[in-house]
Length: 116
Image (cartoon, rainbow, N blue to C red):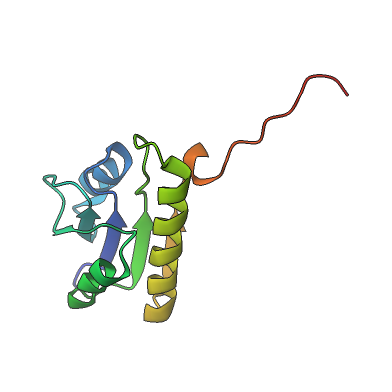
């Protein structure tokens, strides 16, 4: 039986790379990232709808999304745009499942004042 193909965004980051390393013997991972890495098969800026179309050359039915901007000055804006572009693309592809792993940088922090 052949291995299931799974897209992993953020494949050169800690989480994406760890998933690929840990489960690589059971699944065939298609790693994508904005930065090169040993498990990255395609360099893509997820904020760019044209670049996302480069994923059309890969066959996959599942996606694990771990990519997120953690260093730029526009963390919230970049994460919001890349998430919207990626989820729209994946929904149009009608894949079987998406695992989306996020961080505090996917939403603007909510600040509350002390007291009741």
